[in-house]
Length: 409
Image 1: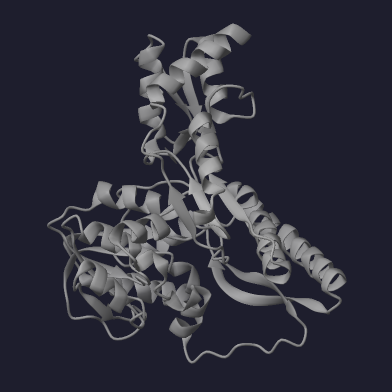
Image 2: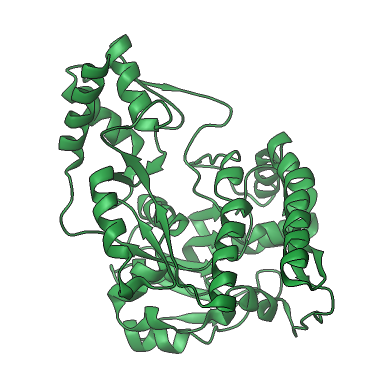
């Protein structure tokens, strides 16, 4: 177990905020769970909040939960994944250290649903559940608290109960240590220097305790001590900390700050997994198709349960033009495919198109899989997901890509 920190860039004379408890502190980091334009309708709610990693949570939860299971969610927060399941008939009771302000708006939108005050480190809830959902929580706990958490959850479960757990970070290893100990402090200091020079005001880097990082083995050992054993496991990729971490966040902050200061409007576009014409060896799907054509085997370096939201470059181009309209001014827009897709399903489709339906080969690597867990709870602006009603069919897009690669080679 290692102690981990967040790095903030703040004005040197900016007083530190004071919060009454842990829930108030975390709520502040989540913009106090305000009810904004995302609460205009159910469709607006899910397009605003059910994005990025929460979509992959949704897929995993639906794989291992059954509608009839009496399920408790701990540290539910805004309860986005929970409400997606509740509206589809799942029996979910939400909980947190406190009731967020936005839950009143959620009740108005979805109807009344159960939301309790529960502290898994405190007095035990009297209920018994078939399943417990615990997402993005345990990184906050030291070893004693982690053991208390697992013991408390174990006591809530029936004999054959299920715990769905997300650690909220890549495992503790060389790459995550490099990111934390070298990359992030240097980047934060560089940004502080940039702001000091640009604004002619003194900025500083503030190092704030963020939680603990553990190896998978340490988490499994703590869970087993409370009678919990692993049934299913999905591996993330800590290397994605670099490509989806503070660099993107910092660049978006630059744009937002410039708009606040000088009134220059912006639109930030975040793309799913792009594919299609004029791609090259830097594109993941291009490499898979080219290798299959060369070897006669469809192969993939990673987990068969990895997820992607593929979007054809033509769809992305049209959506990008639409996103430049006034409706999306000064907003963050997520442009992805119709829905998350398992890589194994894509590979089977590709193998069938190429006439080799049995030739799907998964190559295990140390850093395999799609990133489905948050590496750090950094503050990013919420993105509205835009999905066009008309889109290039994935099968047709694959045929187009295969034809183009055949011509090129």
